[in-house]
Image (cartoon, rainbow, N blue to C red; front, top):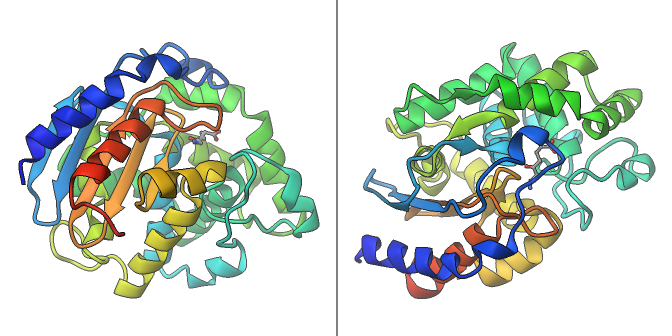
Length: 303
Ligand code: DON
């Protein structure tokens, strides 16, 4: 398969829709991103890497970090996590508070903000350093030592984080956060503010394509847990657009308001597309278009 040609065509398809997206501005540090930027990279299960456009330009991973937090919490033995967070699509915006009250402070899934605050809390309890665990993992899988938290973005998130603080305090009132709320929030803002590029994320997502095996061949997760994470990514990874994403792209995937989307093809590899312009739900317009085109024309599909 000629991956470079496939990626170039997906980039051309994405270029036609980039103007329709708007960078996130509720986190002020993200608002200055250039909506015309676009990059895409894939990494096969055996480590072959291809990229197109600005695939080596670092961006804010935002909610893409949530998949690594969940995986690391499970890897560190956090199976009881599933008593504290569900695995159903929420059908609501990623930062919604509405279901938490009637559902006793248990978030619908680990990929909405409330759910990721719970998994961050669990990873903090299990490791003592949730943000450090995420950064170390991304560096190890990608081989890129420059991956780090962007302190300006983290501060911007914290300064405008009233909704996340409300979610965290509300869950704490139900006993569903075990560490001090401010500590959980600090680790959550930090791992969302990690900067990495399309190549880094495609390589870091490889463990889900390799059924739980890391880049060095060691096992992070059981085959069963890797299967389960992929399933929850497919149904919940792109929020209240998960149905549309499954219809158009047809892969387990996780989006972030920095404009990145990381998608997994079990047994084949991982592909990351990025463009900062978002649709109304918070998913990248260009990355969605590129991934849709890529899966339509390649055999990288689960269907
Ligand atoms: O907490 C927030 O709102 C951001 N740090 C992350 C949200 C996000 O990326 C949702 N993605 N579509």
